[in-house]
Length: 154
Image (spheres, rainbow, N blue to C red):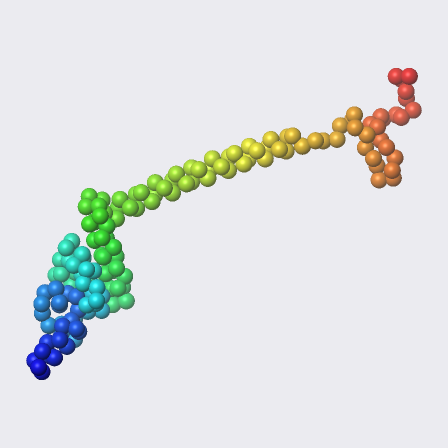
């Protein structure tokens, strides 16, 4: 019974990489912090495209504070490669770039339409003409005649 207890303890503390290769996980295993045993598909996916040896070399050459982000990037890139074997991440990036260009085009068109409508609105605003009488602040009505006493039309 003691033998099974030790085996169970060893399997529960192994990282996903060591579990995949059915080996003991050393205390200083470079893979353990980034490939936990509760997420074996993460390593399987990355291993499929890069190989355990290459992943290990990349992690060893990389500063410790960047390793988690690098593993996440490798995992994301591997998942994209599975979905789109030809383009992978580049296909997603180019699709997003195209969507941005379309949105910018729509925005430019909408801004042009707004400018056009603003210009038409400004041109259509009524301006006081000489035919409409203006009421001045003192209450006198100005009919637009320069000389009010000049009544040539009578």
